[in-house]
Length: 414
Image (cartoon, rainbow, N blue to C red):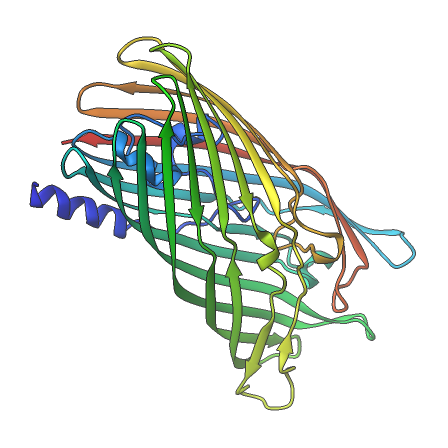
Protein backbone atom coordinates (compact mmCIF):
# COMPACT_ATOMS: atom_id res chain seq x y z
CA UNK A 1 0.00 0.00 0.00
CA UNK A 2 1.27 3.49 -0.84
CA UNK A 3 1.56 5.08 2.60
CA UNK A 4 1.57 8.62 1.23
CA UNK A 5 -1.71 8.09 -0.57
CA UNK A 6 -3.22 6.43 2.49
CA UNK A 7 -2.24 9.34 4.72
CA UNK A 8 -3.62 11.82 2.19
CA UNK A 9 -6.88 9.90 1.92
CA UNK A 10 -7.36 9.74 5.67
CA UNK A 11 -6.63 13.45 6.01
CA UNK A 12 -9.08 14.35 3.25
CA UNK A 13 -11.86 12.38 4.95
CA UNK A 14 -11.19 13.45 8.52
CA UNK A 15 -10.64 17.14 7.76
CA UNK A 16 -13.84 17.63 5.77
CA UNK A 17 -15.46 20.96 6.71
CA UNK A 18 -18.53 21.18 8.88
CA UNK A 19 -21.75 21.32 6.93
CA UNK A 20 -25.19 22.80 7.23
CA UNK A 21 -28.02 21.13 5.36
CA UNK A 22 -31.03 23.05 4.21
CA UNK A 23 -34.80 22.46 4.30
CA UNK A 24 -34.96 19.25 6.20
CA UNK A 25 -33.12 17.22 8.79
CA UNK A 26 -31.95 14.01 7.08
CA UNK A 27 -29.31 14.63 4.41
CA UNK A 28 -29.03 12.28 1.41
CA UNK A 29 -26.93 14.47 -0.89
CA UNK A 30 -23.54 12.76 -0.51
CA UNK A 31 -22.21 13.04 -4.09
CA UNK A 32 -23.19 14.60 -7.39
CA UNK A 33 -23.97 11.18 -8.85
CA UNK A 34 -26.10 10.38 -5.81
CA UNK A 35 -27.98 13.68 -6.18
CA UNK A 36 -28.55 12.98 -9.89
CA UNK A 37 -30.06 9.54 -9.12
CA UNK A 38 -32.30 10.76 -6.29
CA UNK A 39 -30.15 9.06 -3.65
CA UNK A 40 -30.67 5.62 -5.28
CA UNK A 41 -26.97 4.87 -5.68
CA UNK A 42 -26.18 1.76 -3.68
CA UNK A 43 -24.46 -0.30 -6.39
CA UNK A 44 -22.15 2.06 -8.30
CA UNK A 45 -18.97 0.73 -9.89
CA UNK A 46 -15.63 2.23 -8.87
CA UNK A 47 -17.20 4.99 -6.73
CA UNK A 48 -15.59 5.98 -3.42
CA UNK A 49 -18.90 7.53 -2.28
CA UNK A 50 -20.16 3.96 -1.80
CA UNK A 51 -18.75 4.42 1.71
CA UNK A 52 -21.79 6.62 2.34
CA UNK A 53 -24.48 5.06 0.16
CA UNK A 54 -23.68 1.37 0.70
CA UNK A 55 -20.46 0.28 2.47
CA UNK A 56 -20.77 -3.26 1.10
CA UNK A 57 -20.34 -1.84 -2.42
CA UNK A 58 -16.83 -0.51 -1.79
CA UNK A 59 -15.90 -4.03 -2.98
CA UNK A 60 -16.77 -2.68 -6.45
CA UNK A 61 -13.81 -0.26 -6.23
CA UNK A 62 -10.62 -1.36 -8.00
CA UNK A 63 -7.35 -0.15 -6.54
CA UNK A 64 -7.25 3.13 -4.63
CA UNK A 65 -9.54 6.14 -5.06
CA UNK A 66 -10.29 9.47 -3.40
CA UNK A 67 -13.37 11.62 -3.92
CA UNK A 68 -14.72 15.01 -2.88
CA UNK A 69 -18.25 16.29 -3.33
CA UNK A 70 -19.89 19.67 -2.76
CA UNK A 71 -23.66 20.11 -2.79
CA UNK A 72 -25.38 23.49 -2.55
CA UNK A 73 -28.91 23.61 -1.11
CA UNK A 74 -30.99 26.79 -1.16
CA UNK A 75 -34.38 26.69 0.67
CA UNK A 76 -37.33 28.95 -0.12
CA UNK A 77 -40.77 29.06 1.46
CA UNK A 78 -43.73 31.03 2.80
CA UNK A 79 -45.83 30.85 5.95
CA UNK A 80 -49.00 32.20 7.55
CA UNK A 81 -49.71 32.57 11.26
CA UNK A 82 -53.12 32.43 12.96
CA UNK A 83 -54.52 33.40 16.35
CA UNK A 84 -56.78 31.25 18.54
CA UNK A 85 -59.86 32.19 16.52
CA UNK A 86 -58.23 31.10 13.26
CA UNK A 87 -57.68 34.67 12.06
CA UNK A 88 -54.54 35.31 10.03
CA UNK A 89 -52.19 37.61 11.96
CA UNK A 90 -49.02 37.43 9.86
CA UNK A 91 -47.68 36.19 6.56
CA UNK A 92 -44.05 36.02 5.59
CA UNK A 93 -41.25 33.95 4.13
CA UNK A 94 -37.96 32.52 5.23
CA UNK A 95 -34.68 34.35 4.90
CA UNK A 96 -32.79 32.47 2.18
CA UNK A 97 -29.89 30.94 4.07
CA UNK A 98 -28.23 28.35 1.85
CA UNK A 99 -26.36 25.34 3.16
CA UNK A 100 -23.60 23.07 1.93
CA UNK A 101 -23.35 19.29 2.13
CA UNK A 102 -19.71 18.29 1.75
CA UNK A 103 -18.45 14.74 1.36
CA UNK A 104 -14.89 13.35 1.34
CA UNK A 105 -14.14 9.67 0.69
CA UNK A 106 -11.18 7.31 0.43
CA UNK A 107 -11.26 3.62 -0.55
CA UNK A 108 -8.36 1.17 -0.81
CA UNK A 109 -8.52 -2.37 -2.14
CA UNK A 110 -6.27 -4.42 0.14
CA UNK A 111 -6.47 -7.67 -1.85
CA UNK A 112 -9.02 -9.69 -3.83
CA UNK A 113 -11.17 -10.20 -0.72
CA UNK A 114 -10.71 -7.14 1.51
CA UNK A 115 -11.28 -3.40 1.25
CA UNK A 116 -10.84 -0.42 3.57
CA UNK A 117 -12.78 2.81 3.25
CA UNK A 118 -13.38 6.00 5.20
CA UNK A 119 -15.77 8.87 4.59
CA UNK A 120 -16.75 12.18 6.14
CA UNK A 121 -20.24 13.32 5.17
CA UNK A 122 -23.43 14.70 6.77
CA UNK A 123 -26.27 12.38 7.76
CA UNK A 124 -28.23 14.99 9.72
CA UNK A 125 -28.02 18.76 9.33
CA UNK A 126 -30.25 21.78 8.75
CA UNK A 127 -30.37 25.56 8.68
CA UNK A 128 -33.38 27.88 8.73
CA UNK A 129 -33.81 31.61 9.28
CA UNK A 130 -36.74 34.01 9.58
CA UNK A 131 -37.10 37.74 10.16
CA UNK A 132 -36.13 38.67 13.72
CA UNK A 133 -39.02 41.12 14.05
CA UNK A 134 -41.65 38.60 12.95
CA UNK A 135 -44.07 36.72 15.21
CA UNK A 136 -42.48 33.52 13.89
CA UNK A 137 -39.30 34.59 15.69
CA UNK A 138 -40.94 33.78 19.04
CA UNK A 139 -40.60 30.15 17.99
CA UNK A 140 -37.27 30.42 16.15
CA UNK A 141 -35.58 33.02 13.98
CA UNK A 142 -32.30 31.17 13.41
CA UNK A 143 -31.66 27.42 13.72
CA UNK A 144 -28.59 25.55 12.59
CA UNK A 145 -27.36 22.00 13.04
CA UNK A 146 -23.89 21.37 11.69
CA UNK A 147 -23.30 17.64 11.32
CA UNK A 148 -20.63 15.31 10.04
CA UNK A 149 -20.15 11.55 10.30
CA UNK A 150 -16.71 9.97 9.96
CA UNK A 151 -17.09 6.30 9.02
CA UNK A 152 -14.04 3.98 8.92
CA UNK A 153 -15.23 0.83 7.14
CA UNK A 154 -14.01 -2.71 6.48
CA UNK A 155 -15.58 -4.73 3.64
CA UNK A 156 -15.14 -8.36 2.61
CA UNK A 157 -16.07 -10.10 -0.63
CA UNK A 158 -16.91 -13.74 0.14
CA UNK A 159 -17.50 -14.86 -3.45
CA UNK A 160 -19.05 -13.60 -6.70
CA UNK A 161 -22.45 -13.26 -5.06
CA UNK A 162 -21.89 -12.09 -1.47
CA UNK A 163 -20.14 -9.05 -0.01
CA UNK A 164 -20.54 -7.39 3.37
CA UNK A 165 -19.18 -4.49 5.39
CA UNK A 166 -19.10 -3.19 8.93
CA UNK A 167 -18.02 0.21 10.16
CA UNK A 168 -17.90 2.62 13.03
CA UNK A 169 -19.44 6.09 12.98
CA UNK A 170 -17.98 9.09 14.78
CA UNK A 171 -20.77 11.64 14.68
CA UNK A 172 -20.36 15.36 15.40
CA UNK A 173 -23.16 17.87 15.86
CA UNK A 174 -22.94 21.59 16.49
CA UNK A 175 -26.28 23.17 17.41
CA UNK A 176 -27.25 26.84 17.47
CA UNK A 177 -30.78 28.04 18.28
CA UNK A 178 -31.94 31.65 18.43
CA UNK A 179 -35.43 32.94 19.23
CA UNK A 180 -37.27 35.82 20.84
CA UNK A 181 -38.53 35.02 24.33
CA UNK A 182 -42.22 35.94 24.43
CA UNK A 183 -44.56 36.50 27.39
CA UNK A 184 -48.06 35.38 26.26
CA UNK A 185 -49.92 37.13 29.11
CA UNK A 186 -48.39 40.57 28.48
CA UNK A 187 -47.99 39.85 24.73
CA UNK A 188 -44.51 41.27 24.60
CA UNK A 189 -41.02 40.13 23.68
CA UNK A 190 -38.81 39.84 26.75
CA UNK A 191 -35.58 39.53 24.82
CA UNK A 192 -33.57 37.40 22.41
CA UNK A 193 -32.05 34.07 23.44
CA UNK A 194 -29.22 32.00 21.99
CA UNK A 195 -28.34 28.38 22.77
CA UNK A 196 -25.09 27.09 21.29
CA UNK A 197 -23.20 23.85 21.89
CA UNK A 198 -21.60 20.78 20.34
CA UNK A 199 -21.23 17.07 20.95
CA UNK A 200 -19.45 13.93 19.69
CA UNK A 201 -21.01 10.47 19.87
CA UNK A 202 -20.41 6.97 18.49
CA UNK A 203 -22.52 4.71 16.31
CA UNK A 204 -22.03 1.88 13.84
CA UNK A 205 -23.26 0.53 10.51
CA UNK A 206 -23.42 -2.77 8.65
CA UNK A 207 -24.26 -3.69 5.06
CA UNK A 208 -24.57 -6.69 2.76
CA UNK A 209 -24.99 -7.23 -1.00
CA UNK A 210 -26.18 -10.30 -2.87
CA UNK A 211 -25.93 -10.68 -6.68
CA UNK A 212 -28.45 -13.07 -8.20
CA UNK A 213 -26.64 -12.92 -11.54
CA UNK A 214 -24.79 -10.41 -13.71
CA UNK A 215 -27.89 -8.21 -14.04
CA UNK A 216 -29.69 -8.29 -10.69
CA UNK A 217 -28.44 -7.41 -7.21
CA UNK A 218 -29.95 -6.49 -3.86
CA UNK A 219 -28.45 -4.79 -0.83
CA UNK A 220 -29.30 -3.72 2.70
CA UNK A 221 -27.67 -1.14 4.98
CA UNK A 222 -28.34 -0.55 8.67
CA UNK A 223 -27.18 2.55 10.53
CA UNK A 224 -27.50 2.65 14.30
CA UNK A 225 -29.14 5.36 16.37
CA UNK A 226 -26.78 7.84 18.02
CA UNK A 227 -27.45 9.59 21.34
CA UNK A 228 -25.88 12.98 21.93
CA UNK A 229 -25.48 14.55 25.36
CA UNK A 230 -25.20 18.18 24.42
CA UNK A 231 -23.49 20.71 26.67
CA UNK A 232 -24.21 24.26 25.57
CA UNK A 233 -24.03 27.92 26.50
CA UNK A 234 -27.29 29.81 26.96
CA UNK A 235 -27.48 33.59 26.58
CA UNK A 236 -30.40 35.93 26.92
CA UNK A 237 -30.36 39.57 25.89
CA UNK A 238 -33.29 41.26 27.72
CA UNK A 239 -35.13 44.05 25.93
CA UNK A 240 -34.20 46.30 28.84
CA UNK A 241 -30.50 45.72 28.19
CA UNK A 242 -27.69 43.62 29.57
CA UNK A 243 -27.03 39.89 29.23
CA UNK A 244 -27.95 36.79 31.23
CA UNK A 245 -25.92 33.61 30.82
CA UNK A 246 -26.43 30.02 31.96
CA UNK A 247 -25.17 26.48 31.39
CA UNK A 248 -27.45 24.39 29.20
CA UNK A 249 -27.74 20.63 28.79
CA UNK A 250 -29.87 18.44 26.56
CA UNK A 251 -30.09 14.93 25.14
CA UNK A 252 -30.93 14.28 21.48
CA UNK A 253 -31.13 10.83 19.86
CA UNK A 254 -30.52 10.72 16.12
CA UNK A 255 -32.57 7.88 14.59
CA UNK A 256 -31.45 4.53 13.26
CA UNK A 257 -32.35 3.63 9.68
CA UNK A 258 -32.57 0.81 7.14
CA UNK A 259 -31.78 1.09 3.41
CA UNK A 260 -33.02 -1.62 1.04
CA UNK A 261 -31.92 -1.44 -2.59
CA UNK A 262 -32.27 -3.27 -5.88
CA UNK A 263 -30.09 -2.88 -8.96
CA UNK A 264 -30.96 -4.06 -12.48
CA UNK A 265 -28.65 -3.83 -15.50
CA UNK A 266 -30.57 -3.81 -18.76
CA UNK A 267 -27.30 -4.11 -20.65
CA UNK A 268 -23.71 -2.89 -20.36
CA UNK A 269 -24.79 0.73 -20.82
CA UNK A 270 -28.00 1.18 -18.82
CA UNK A 271 -28.99 0.29 -15.27
CA UNK A 272 -31.83 1.11 -12.85
CA UNK A 273 -31.74 1.38 -9.06
CA UNK A 274 -34.61 1.29 -6.59
CA UNK A 275 -34.14 2.25 -2.96
CA UNK A 276 -36.35 2.41 0.13
CA UNK A 277 -35.17 3.96 3.40
CA UNK A 278 -36.90 3.45 6.74
CA UNK A 279 -35.96 6.08 9.34
CA UNK A 280 -37.12 5.67 12.93
CA UNK A 281 -37.85 9.33 13.60
CA UNK A 282 -39.81 8.38 16.74
CA UNK A 283 -36.50 8.67 18.63
CA UNK A 284 -36.89 12.45 18.19
CA UNK A 285 -39.65 12.73 20.78
CA UNK A 286 -38.59 15.99 22.43
CA UNK A 287 -35.99 18.73 22.49
CA UNK A 288 -35.69 19.49 26.20
CA UNK A 289 -33.00 21.82 27.50
CA UNK A 290 -32.09 22.15 31.19
CA UNK A 291 -30.59 25.40 32.44
CA UNK A 292 -28.36 25.77 35.49
CA UNK A 293 -26.01 28.27 37.13
CA UNK A 294 -27.55 31.44 35.64
CA UNK A 295 -25.55 34.65 35.98
CA UNK A 296 -28.75 36.30 37.32
CA UNK A 297 -30.38 33.71 39.67
CA UNK A 298 -34.16 33.38 39.75
CA UNK A 299 -34.74 34.93 36.32
CA UNK A 300 -34.52 31.94 33.97
CA UNK A 301 -36.62 28.75 34.12
CA UNK A 302 -34.81 25.52 34.99
CA UNK A 303 -36.13 23.75 31.88
CA UNK A 304 -37.06 24.75 28.33
CA UNK A 305 -39.08 21.81 26.98
CA UNK A 306 -40.40 21.24 23.46
CA UNK A 307 -42.32 18.07 22.53
CA UNK A 308 -41.68 16.72 19.01
CA UNK A 309 -43.11 13.16 18.82
CA UNK A 310 -42.13 12.65 15.20
CA UNK A 311 -43.36 9.48 13.50
CA UNK A 312 -41.30 6.88 11.66
CA UNK A 313 -41.23 7.34 7.91
CA UNK A 314 -40.14 6.02 4.53
CA UNK A 315 -38.17 7.55 1.68
CA UNK A 316 -38.46 5.99 -1.79
CA UNK A 317 -36.08 6.69 -4.65
CA UNK A 318 -35.50 5.58 -8.23
CA UNK A 319 -32.39 6.32 -10.25
CA UNK A 320 -31.40 5.69 -13.86
CA UNK A 321 -27.85 5.71 -15.26
CA UNK A 322 -26.95 5.46 -18.95
CA UNK A 323 -23.43 5.34 -20.40
CA UNK A 324 -23.22 6.89 -23.86
CA UNK A 325 -19.59 5.79 -24.16
CA UNK A 326 -16.61 4.80 -22.03
CA UNK A 327 -16.28 8.45 -20.98
CA UNK A 328 -19.72 10.05 -20.86
CA UNK A 329 -22.85 9.17 -18.90
CA UNK A 330 -26.18 10.74 -17.94
CA UNK A 331 -28.28 10.16 -14.84
CA UNK A 332 -31.77 11.02 -13.62
CA UNK A 333 -33.69 10.38 -10.43
CA UNK A 334 -36.80 10.93 -8.37
CA UNK A 335 -37.36 10.60 -4.62
CA UNK A 336 -40.44 10.77 -2.39
CA UNK A 337 -39.93 11.42 1.31
CA UNK A 338 -42.89 10.99 3.67
CA UNK A 339 -43.72 13.73 6.17
CA UNK A 340 -42.91 12.66 9.73
CA UNK A 341 -43.76 15.84 11.66
CA UNK A 342 -47.10 15.81 13.56
CA UNK A 343 -49.32 18.85 14.03
CA UNK A 344 -48.33 19.17 17.69
CA UNK A 345 -44.62 18.63 17.01
CA UNK A 346 -43.85 21.08 14.23
CA UNK A 347 -41.88 24.30 14.52
CA UNK A 348 -39.90 26.84 12.52
CA UNK A 349 -36.65 24.93 13.10
CA UNK A 350 -37.68 22.36 10.45
CA UNK A 351 -40.88 23.58 8.70
CA UNK A 352 -40.84 20.65 6.29
CA UNK A 353 -43.69 18.56 4.88
CA UNK A 354 -43.41 15.65 2.47
CA UNK A 355 -40.64 16.06 -0.08
CA UNK A 356 -40.50 15.23 -3.79
CA UNK A 357 -37.09 15.59 -5.44
CA UNK A 358 -36.48 15.67 -9.20
CA UNK A 359 -32.90 15.52 -10.43
CA UNK A 360 -30.61 15.09 -13.43
CA UNK A 361 -26.86 14.86 -13.87
CA UNK A 362 -23.92 14.02 -16.12
CA UNK A 363 -20.54 12.40 -15.65
CA UNK A 364 -17.19 12.38 -17.44
CA UNK A 365 -14.50 9.84 -16.62
CA UNK A 366 -11.21 8.56 -17.95
CA UNK A 367 -8.77 6.04 -16.53
CA UNK A 368 -7.66 8.32 -13.68
CA UNK A 369 -10.38 10.79 -12.85
CA UNK A 370 -14.12 11.35 -12.77
CA UNK A 371 -16.08 14.61 -12.75
CA UNK A 372 -19.84 14.69 -12.19
CA UNK A 373 -22.42 17.47 -11.92
CA UNK A 374 -26.08 17.41 -10.91
CA UNK A 375 -29.08 19.69 -10.52
CA UNK A 376 -32.13 19.03 -8.39
CA UNK A 377 -35.39 20.64 -7.38
CA UNK A 378 -37.10 19.59 -4.16
CA UNK A 379 -40.80 20.28 -3.68
CA UNK A 380 -41.03 20.45 0.10
CA UNK A 381 -44.79 20.55 0.35
CA UNK A 382 -47.04 22.14 2.99
CA UNK A 383 -46.97 21.74 6.76
CA UNK A 384 -49.49 22.79 9.42
CA UNK A 385 -48.40 22.89 13.03
CA UNK A 386 -49.55 24.24 16.39
CA UNK A 387 -47.87 27.04 18.27
CA UNK A 388 -46.30 26.48 21.68
CA UNK A 389 -47.43 28.19 24.88
CA UNK A 390 -44.70 30.81 24.53
CA UNK A 391 -45.27 31.55 20.82
CA UNK A 392 -47.03 34.69 19.58
CA UNK A 393 -49.41 32.61 17.44
CA UNK A 394 -51.69 29.59 17.91
CA UNK A 395 -51.10 27.80 14.61
CA UNK A 396 -48.94 28.07 11.50
CA UNK A 397 -49.13 27.04 7.86
CA UNK A 398 -45.92 26.64 5.81
CA UNK A 399 -46.52 26.47 2.06
CA UNK A 400 -44.97 26.89 -1.43
CA UNK A 401 -41.68 25.62 -0.05
CA UNK A 402 -38.93 24.29 -2.28
CA UNK A 403 -35.16 23.81 -2.34
CA UNK A 404 -32.74 24.33 -5.21
CA UNK A 405 -29.90 21.81 -5.38
CA UNK A 406 -26.61 21.90 -7.31
CA UNK A 407 -23.75 19.45 -6.85
CA UNK A 408 -20.29 18.66 -8.19
CA UNK A 409 -17.97 15.74 -7.46
CA UNK A 410 -14.39 14.93 -8.37
CA UNK A 411 -12.74 11.52 -8.00
CA UNK A 412 -9.11 10.52 -8.55
CA UNK A 413 -7.71 7.01 -8.97
CA UNK A 414 -4.16 6.18 -7.96
